[in-house]
Length: 538
Image (cartoon, rainbow, N blue to C red; front, top):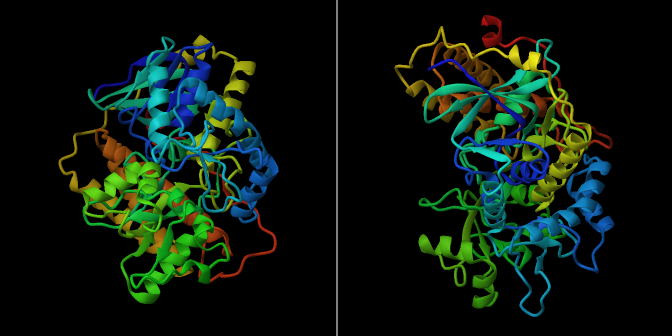
């Protein structure tokens, strides 16, 4: 592996989902922007968001109602200023997407946009493009950034670590591995935006793509940023359970449009767990399914929407219909076998309402950030809205306060040191640790937790971290190694946060602390200030 060479840009955006591409388009009005994606531009969680985007577009709905629903779903840990910001600014964000050309679904009986209702929402406020909203939005944004002359796109580039100034108070860009050439490059920038998505790949079963490995959270933590609420990882209640296709998400909108969760014998069970039955928030539904599966010793439950008209089902859920049909399930006639799977990281890098982190010149937006919006549980379809809104607020702050880094500071950025590394002779060490980490997280840090499981997970993760650290500094870099390093770092943060919370709340349910405290606060972890080994060597 060769040493780094430097490239300079005004703004470095790491991540190509809805948050990253949105802020890139906005900043490109005034600056040169470089967008880094560790796979193709299309391979991110935005692509897989089926349901839609929550915003108040119905005249019978209100911002206050959206705020109330979000606060209730967040189980007392939402920060109301963040909730109000998203509920208010999300409306304009939708109209901006429409102006960009996103073809949202129209109501068949009028020219208005069709709005659906999802679990936890008191009104129909989820605008969508059939059941492939994320894919449609992503395709539109990719078209716009590709045609923008002020945006440089770098797909197949895996970020290694952030570049800091000498006193570790400012971010100056990042070191990036070009996966095609195996070169590590230094991308230096006046401002860096982390929009790298979540960390659900930490778990054995997930609805997320392979890119969801917590890269931004891990890099920011190593650089000295605080993280908040990492114990709250949302498990989507309904992922397809089938040996040929286990990672396919069945949208919340299926229940919103009348889908009923049933046991194998046809018994509808959700009303026994919550008065809202199948429209309860995701954390309640996921725990209910987990409880029923363990109680009856079954591998899955069933989501049945076959009582709705066939043309209605095919029109509203064409992607789900086609995907299920491939494995022999006709959802117009048959119930869908489903299980919970890790889906969304509600915690992340601590930021303010402008996306600013603890480090100067470093911003975090989207799922990688903790803004205070989601609290202890994310309300359905608030995530894409969050990405859009904080892309706007971060853009506004950078555009108003832009201050270039001195050329002398950039000149002092050091090359990535490769003088003490060798090519790895065995890759089994990485694949084994990868599998072990994800399985222990599933078994010990899943939907229902105990102190014993959490402490056992923490002990094993510490051993894995040491093994991976030694491997990292001794061998040439690969994307698999970098992802494993990040996953293990994030898993450690998740477990430490879960151990600190001595109650059950929202997505965190501990059998040893089954009650919810009257008063609670977010769990924030602050890293110890230390110099990474690769910087010590330089």
